Image 1: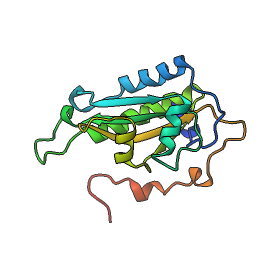
Image 2: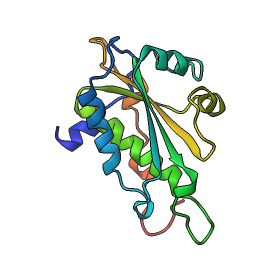
Image 3: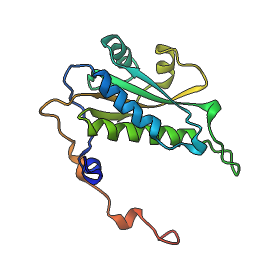
Image 4: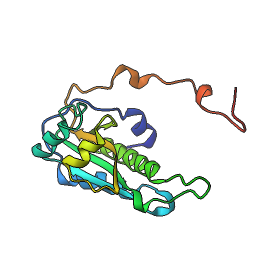
Amino acid sequence: MEFQKLIADRYSVRQFKQAHLKQEDIDSILSAACLAPTGCNYQPQRILVLNTEKDMQKVSTCTKCHFNAPAAMLVCYNKEESWKRPYDGALSAPVDAAIVATHMMLAAHNIGVGCCWVMHFDPAKMRETFHIPENIEPTALLVMGYPTQDAKPLPLHTQFRPMEEIVFYGEWGE
């Protein structure tokens, strides 16, 4: 798919067919995750693939925003493998995980897999439920599946702030 069309057409899918993802689609999405840039190429991302009914029942105990999706991928990062900015100690790993999740969402849409980025989940419950080690930080839950025929974006999907409110050149604007 042409890139501008891909990013314009992608939306947060909240209505899914009840079919688990095919392995080749999972592999395609994970390949995009591996190609995502990360700080100093440390690749701190860790991805938990959840593609069974049992997995998704567990997900539903960690968030109400599962939208009855048949699959999900939990994007995490390893806190011990992050590049650290020397000026203030800021870690690149949270940003790295966001970049990885974005690559995954775009790759999913490109192959016909609908996806919704969910930040509204209980990280402690997620950690306990899926036995996530303390050094691994859950960041983004991508609920996904094949969209139903009547799936469509929410009305807010096409509402954007004017460019002059969000972009500044040279110095910060007023």
